[in-house]
Amino acid sequence: MHKKLKMVVVASLMMASALAAQAKMNPEQIVSSYLQAWGEKDTAKREQILRAAVIDKVRHNDSYSLAETRPELDGQIVQMLSRYPGMQSKMVGNVRTTGSSALFEWSIVDAAGAELFHGVDAVIFADDGRLQRIDGHIGLRLQ
Image (cartoon, rainbow, N blue to C red; front, side, top):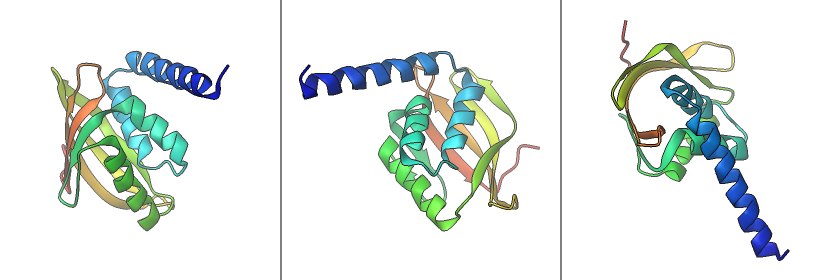
């Protein structure tokens, strides 16, 4: 096989695998994957997680930043990881869904487990189930 053809076949298989995995994911799993990406140091793993959790033209907006594509969102994550090495993001409570939208509370902790930030995200799911829009509200709690 020619090198280009091999690359196309491998890329197609990776995309099919990611789409099959995402098709089996419910809103809670999508949100959990999205939050997992915020603590993933490995670039390839983080990109794979984001591909499964958000669409290419995802819009992420909060008090500090705006991203309008998956690579821009990944850049925001990289900045946070460089500023807070070892940070992890976790869901607090459950995802509250209504139709194609949801609310969920999250917490970002440092490597020792101390809370750095908390907030609530309001999200809209795309037709394929992945996140299309994420509006972050830092400092809010649902309870």
